Image (cartoon, rainbow, N blue to C red; front, side, top):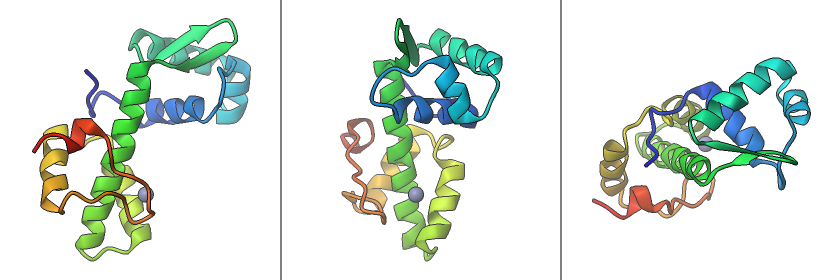
Amino acid sequence: MVDLGDITVRELEYLRAINDEDSPISITSLSRKLGRSASSVYEEVNHLVSKGLVCKGPEGVYLSSDGKMLLELVDNSHRIIETWLVSLGFSVDEACRLASKMETTMPIEVLRKLYEKIGRPRSCPHGKPITFSMVTNKA
Ligand SMILES: [Zn+2]
């Protein structure tokens, strides 16, 4: 089972870049997109494959189901933290910036409590949905 804290900011950058594509992306395209050398991208992709977050196919790399789940967890984490910060009085922009620093480090059990505490919101201040069952199903 995926958990936050299992992922670094750099890994997240890769997962988001890969996920943005509608189809598998080649190492060359990915390195162009990220502005990094093909060899460092190749290395990082292999690392993500060994963690079970990315798969390699003949057409290129794509996210595994665990990779997708982890990304969804991070996005929901961001939205919950952001909603909470706005309720504390931060502006939406400030809350978004701060949430980006905390989204990968907040333990799931804390997120669940926070989600309950702020009244089980359905969306974040940007209107994006908070629906991920790993966070919203349990108290
Ligand atoms: Zn945000």
